[in-house]
Amino acid sequence: MEQQARRPGTPVQPDFDRLNRDWYIDKVVQLLVFLGGVSAIVFIIGIFVFITREGFGFLLGDFNFREFFFSPNWRPTSETRETFGILALIAGTASVTGLAMLIAIPFSLGAAIYIAEFATGKTREFLKVTVELLAAIPSVVWGFIGLAIMNPLIIKTFDVPVGLTVLNAGVILGLMAAPIMTSIAEDALKAVPDRYREAAEAMGATRWQVIYKVVLPAAKNGLLGAVLLGVGRGFGETMAVLMATGHSINIPTSIFDSVRALTATIAAELGETAAGSSHYQALFTIGIFLFVVTFIINLVADLVVRGVRKG
Amino acid sequence: MLTRNTATVLLSAALVATLIACGGGEQRTLIQNKGSDTLVNVAQAWAEAYQTVNPNVVVAVSGGGSGTGIAALINGTVDIANASRAIKDKEADLAEQNGQHPVQHVVGYDALAIFLHMDNPIDEITIAQLKGIFVDGGSTTTWTDLGVDVPGCKGQEIVVVSRQNNSGTYAYFRKAVLGEEDFRLGTRDMHGSKDVVDLVEKTPCAIGYSGLAYATDHVKMPCVSTGSGATCITPSVDTAVDGTYPIARPLFMYTDGEPAGAIGEYMNWIKSDEGQCIILEKGYAPFRDVNCS
Image 1 (cartoon, rainbow over the protein chains, first blue to last red):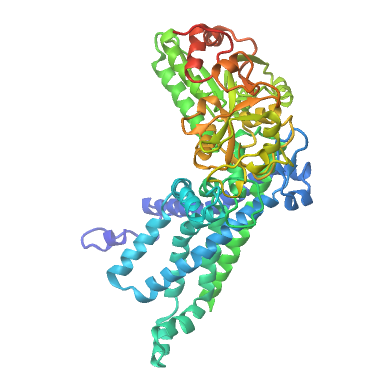
Image 2: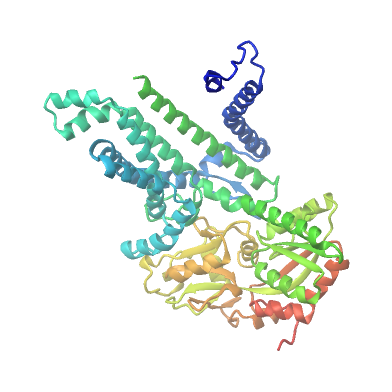
C-alpha cells in the first residue's frame, strides 16, 4: 500500500480515510493470528477438561489412592476382583525412561558439543540436518526396530530368554530422545557469548578447558532443560515402548526384565473397553496422571531454560 | 485404537456415500459387521463370497475385538457383531437399556491351541499343568517343575505369553483353564493372536495360547488332556467339531433381534453348507457337520 502510494504519478491516499480494503484485511489477519495464538491454550484446556471428565467417575467411585499408586495389581477385567494398581506401570515407565536418559545424555551432549564448538562449515550443517532427520523417524518404525532387530540381538548377545526388555526399550527410547536433546543442547551452547570463550582462550586455556570450565557451566540451565524435555519425550512415548518392552506387568529388578509402560497400557486397552465402565475411566485416570506429570516436567524445563536467558 | 475406530467410521461413511451415489436404479443394502479379531478373516471371506450370491448386499467388515463389536451393537452402530466370547450379563443389560435385543448365533468353533517352541520336549500337557503355569500364585515357574529340560532356555524359566486383558481369547482361556481365577502378573501380553505365535516361535522358554488357525510350522502344539489319566487330544478342526478337545470355544455372531430381511438371509447363508465350508477353509471348525469338496 505504501509503495503504491509513494510511486510518482499515482494519487496519494488521504491519510484519515483508513477504512479501505487493506484496513479490513489487516484487521482480519490480526484476528486470525490472534486465534491461532490462543488456540494452543484453548486446546490444552479442552483436552484437560475432556480427560478429567472421562476419568472423574472413577476418581469419585472405585478410586482407591493406596491401591492405585502402591499396588502392582493391574487387573481391570478380573472376574473375581477388579484391581486398579499402577505401581508396576509407573516402575515400567520410569525404568525405561531412566535407562533411555543414561544412554541419551552422553550421546546428545557429545553431539551438541561437537556441533556447537568444533564442527565448522559444511560438516556442521550436514550434522545438524542429519540430527533433525533422526528426530523425524516415526515411533512405530523405532518400535519395529526394537521388535525385529534388537529382540534377537539381545537374546543372542546376553543369552536371556526374551529380548523385549527394559534394555531394548531403553536403547530405542534413548535413540529417539537424543536428537531433540542434541538440538536444544546445541542451542544452549550457542547462546553462550563468544567473549566468554575469547576471554578464556586469552588466559591460556585449552579447547577442552574452555568447554569444561567456561562454556558448560554457562550453558548449565539450557542443558538441564534439554535433558528434562528428553525425559518428557520418553515419558509420553507410546508406540515404541508398547512394541519393545514385552508389555508385561512387572516391577523390574534388572534391565533384562520385561515391563509395561503407562502409555502403552492405555493404547492397548482403551480400544476394546466399553465406554463409561470403570476400566475405561481408570485408563483415563492414568491419562490424567500422565498429563500432570508431563505438564510438570515441561514446566520445569521451560522455567530452567528461561533462567539461562535472564542470566 | 481410537484412530482405527475413526478410520472405520470414515471408511464406512465413504462407503455409504458411494453407495448412495451409485445406488441409482437398483436397491443396494449395506450390512455393517464388526468385532472379534479371531473372526475377522472369516468374516471378510464370507463378505467377499456373498457378493457372488447376492450382489445387491454389501457387507462391510471391520475388526477391533469382541468387546468393540459388542459395544458397537449396544450403541446400534452395527448390524452384526462378531465375538469369540459370549456376551456378558452387564453388556446384555446395557443393550436392553439402549433398546437393542442381542440374539446369539453360533457360527463355528475354534480350538485354542497351546503353543511351544520347536525345541521344547513337551508333547502332552494337562489342564492342571496349564493352570499352574498361567494362574496367579501358580506353583509352576520353571520347565524343571514340569520335569523337562528345554534346550536353549537359560535358567529353565517359563516365559508366559498371554493376550491383552480385553481380548475374547484371553477371557475364554481364563474361564476354561483358570476357572475364572486371575492370570499371574508378569505375563507378556501380546496384542494379537499372530504376535503370540511369533514370540513363541523365537523364544525357547515360551508357552502361549491362541486360535488353531494361527498355527504355523515353526511352533509346536502339544496335545491337551483334562487329567493325567484322560486321553490326550491333539488340537484340530475334527477334535473341535466332535467336542473331544477340551479347550475349544464357540464363535458367535450377534444381531439385534431375530435377523430379518437382508441380514436374516445373510445369517442363513453363513449357517448353510457354503458358508460353513468357508469357515473350515480358514482353519476353524464348522458348527455342524458339512460336506465340503
